[in-house]
Length: 101
Length: 170
Image (cartoon, rainbow over all chains, first blue to last red; front, top):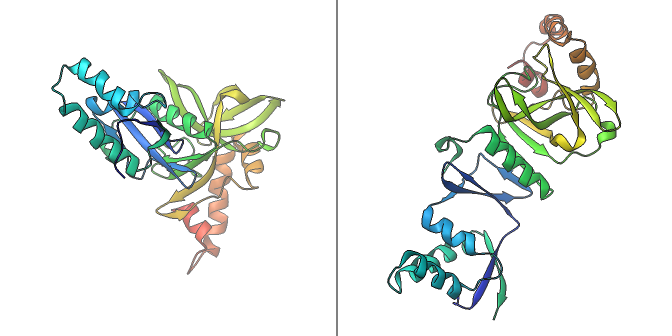
């Protein structure tokens, strides 16, 4: 499923996230159990910035605008990063759609 | 990314447990250390779940955040050996001679609901036998009793051992 710039996502209840050694570690909760023995997911600096703004309020377009200003990056580069990450974490169930305007 | 690739502190681990339990879920991780030997051993996989019933918690093995040596905010998984009053619990490692002290119910993150050793269930110590273990541990006679028990029962365990006994002695 392709996300639209107007889509708002929120973090899923089915995860536990904690910053460890500078990386944001996400542990999926599967069948009611968060398992440190299973695969964990680590978000790097850029992904962390995106993750922090997925809050059930910002649209993807707004997140892209904020990050373009923050990083002073050319249009398109940030959008590619944001959409790429969102597709990935959406696929894994780390975020869910909040409202589609 | 796997856990072994991470340098995870006890404080981070306790926070992960806290966050997961707050969602009403359980948290599974590898136990470190021998303070609960022989019932929980180094590298056993333990699952911490929400505390079910504080009034029936004698002998439960619980996760708390406390001080261990010089470290604070340390995740400790030890046994309730006495219920002091309505919401106060004396907690102690089975393999320790001293208790960790008295903790309030609000200090308890959750209780051990499952133990796996070498991929097999090893839950002896968290069933009904926990009442007796708590009494023996509080009296500091648990380890001698376990040794005697082992000597007495060993001659009778020949051939194919039961799963629980096998795991207990491994």
